[in-house]
Image 1: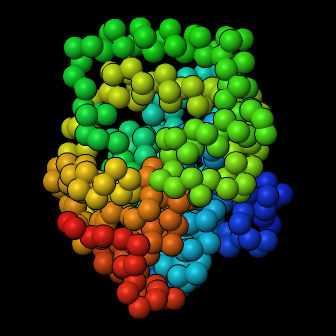
Image 2 (image 1 turned 135 degrees about the vertical axis):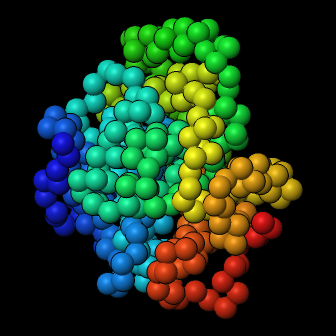
Length: 353
């Protein structure tokens, strides 16, 4: 059972994370199955047309929570909010509570999202899935299908091999996962997490990792990003969610890399794919085509390579990401045309599909 407790003015946390003084959403505190709590940001549609809402799945990382999508919320507002937009904290992240020592598998977060869709959003939604959270979205589809999912938009998804590993090495990988998880839950794991979020000046290691592995341009790794991650990682108990993902995704055949190609192949809703061009346009196009060619209903005319981005499109390049989402909603769900798109609205993207 999942219930919205309150709908309030933006909280101090959301204001601190937002790039403007007045965010275009309200923040709701939600109770999940009577014993866990998390926050969701809800931005209403700018019209009354019956258009599926967008529900944004955040990535997992040191200090990363629903505030990851604040820039996208702002750009969506500038376009007239062609559909309602929800972003939320995964259990164990942000200001979700409690944060127990438990392994957060894709099934755990899929159950949270499925309940949120059914009991709060109350209509099939378009899931906007950041990076390695694709297994979570697939588990929602496995659970509820079209009753919960109207479409999927993948932002920098992992390659097919991420969730198509055979079962031959599963036993060994599960053993590796258990060992890594045990180490993560130890005092040494606590110290390691504190080291990851630390450095001099504060957040130095977050900045270094972001520049090395997440963003295409070092110039995009500003104080807003670093301070947002520092705030999200202040509670060291958030390490259990971060380490769950790492322990389950690094060993081939870990829980996050279980065989799910059959679930992907069964998706019979429109699928959009956006990737960054880091590593070269040809390489990015090839990786995107691998999944698009396998999808049952690929939205090729709405899929694109977003220039100047790597793994975090919604933060690195929120304007072109928002425009492509608006195109997807207009062409496949009859959303009203977005406003404020300048002439040459494809600026910042390449659409080779």
